[in-house]
Image (cartoon, rainbow, N blue to C red; front, top):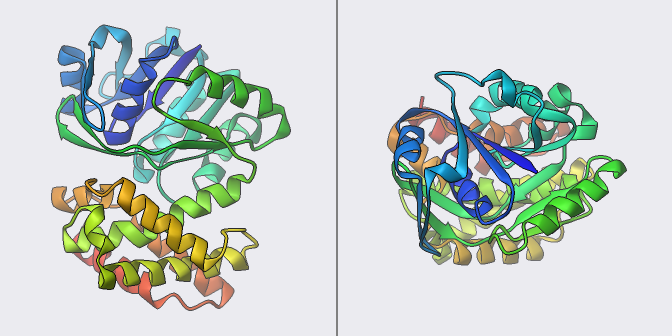
Length: 308
């Protein structure tokens, strides 16, 4: 089986290293100094576990150069791990790489990703996905595994069941901790609710996830999440009770306490964040449904003010 990982940032690099423990052929596509150093040094993982993977374990292609023709229609599984701002370009690339009967999924934050993939690749080749692993780039070619989590997958059409089960079994022992769940829409929304609660607050305060466990910060995170949950419920999404959501948030903060979330890293780098597909999207959907989301609006507005 050939697995292509598109967008080799923090979580993409971690998944590439973990996938190297399987028998799959691993293709990585990325750009910049980080990819250049992976070509030279391979990948070094620190944090939850420490290990290295030689560059020869991967097939590497570069955004600056493009994809050779022999890669077309060669991937059984495509994992899109880039930021939401690059999703459309990575979808185009996935359409060239993916076999006719392959499957693709995005572990990108935000709402609307599955719909964008389905438009480009077809519903029959797209599955729902969400991950709770925490990672950040320590330096080029080095990734810190900041929190062990899981990869959750859900089918989009019933014909994907066998493919998902085969892929799940092939990941046993890799550390990815894959689990197949039934409700894909609930899966995506529950991850988004965690993101809207953690990312903007951590980014504004300049703190690691664990700092949000303080009473006042945690209360703000919970109230922000409940606003989003009210929007989800109005869209007929089962996200559980407020008590369950609060428990899940606390567990994620505990398991990723030393993680510096992606939005904080973007703010530090002066880069565009994913706020438009997180808290701002909650606000937009709430307005259409007549649901007030003042905390999400405030957080979105502040992040938009301090970033490009």
